[in-house]
Image (cartoon, rainbow, N blue to C red):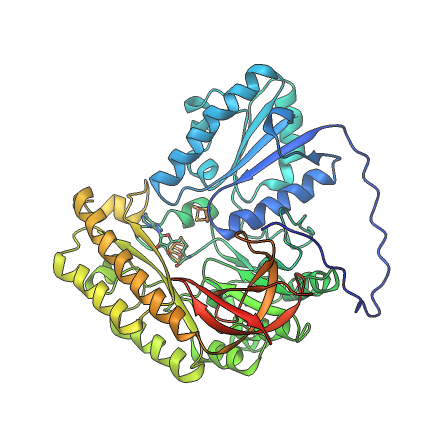
Length: 476
Ligand code: SAH
Ligand code: SF4
Ligand code: F3S
């Protein structure tokens, strides 16, 4: 996520907006993010809130007046990484005793004020729904007191805040469409760290997409823990509380996708994450109908065995999941599919692990994100099941899953050779300044000679070679 901006000439009939001037307060913020795209997107909200108060950003934490780390709690390893990082910040606090260190995001929400007891270095602890209070919390911390706000909200979507695009390539951007999650998968900490699910006003979503397009961006990714359960009913009411009549005038995810796709045919639309239990054919037909909605679906499976899926409280069986895969293949034959999977969930037998491998063999995913089960405090699994698969077994099963996925990724990538791909250029290739890189609709990276192309261009590339996960070709 870095690079240059492309100015677009097609700003049509946009009202001239004069930004209210911000008077710099002379203070510098160092902001670092861990975890999922949602966290990175939240950091852009945080940057916006503090920019309005006069803060500038710095890439060097020894220079900073305030360090904020936006944290992830999904697995124990994610939390350990944050704690290591905090010990690094100690060095900066030694040279600048007035330095304020704040922990934001999911780990802050999980640990709350306990964080202040565990990590003496930390001055501020703020959960994902409390970022509007950051300026006041900094003021409290500046008086030498500790400051905590971990209140979760049923309404907060930060819909009115224009994110400051951090480390942007000027071409691709995230847009949050829902916050929180109501699913309670047995292994997952997210419902505890991000609270109840709520949907954001579709008008503010399409406006953000239009503004991005006007600034030269050419791709947006709509973000939610379960995008398929997006539902806007005017006041953001929950599904269970609305009448049949209100439901008729509501905006579903399929309808939202279409609205965003209609912003401009040159604006690519991606989305993440789809949930197998809620992804119905209407969404697939909408994807098939609009050329600019990318043919790529991230559909986490978690396990290929129905008993484990039931224990995980995922709300679908192996058969249901495979039925959804069939629907994708039928309605969007060119679609790429990726997944998340967990090895060694509580009581998983060798046979049940084989079911995961056989499901992978059936689907042959294009990409995969693979994890060993990590027990999280307070989750349904932690309260009701024993984490009884030994660590070595979890990692051996994970290694088998990873090996199979590498094979499938290579197989899918190879199928792209000899074909023409429409690529949206994102930047200069890491390996050579003479090469550009971008992605095709299926989300596979494509590398080709630069010629006169630049980030933000759409280029038709004839692919003649590949590595395990990258297509290599030449513009035609
Ligand atoms: N909302 C998304 C997932 C968000 S978390 C969904 O429903 O699919 C991203 C991934 O992390 C999950 O899909 C899961 O595979 C993994 N994960 C979540 N909790 C985990 C845990 N306790 N141990 C190991 N992996 C976990
Ligand atoms: Fe976690 Fe399940 Fe919600 Fe995804 S859908 S965030 S895995 S509880
Ligand atoms: Fe991590 Fe929170 Fe995202 S736990 S995966 S940062 S929602």
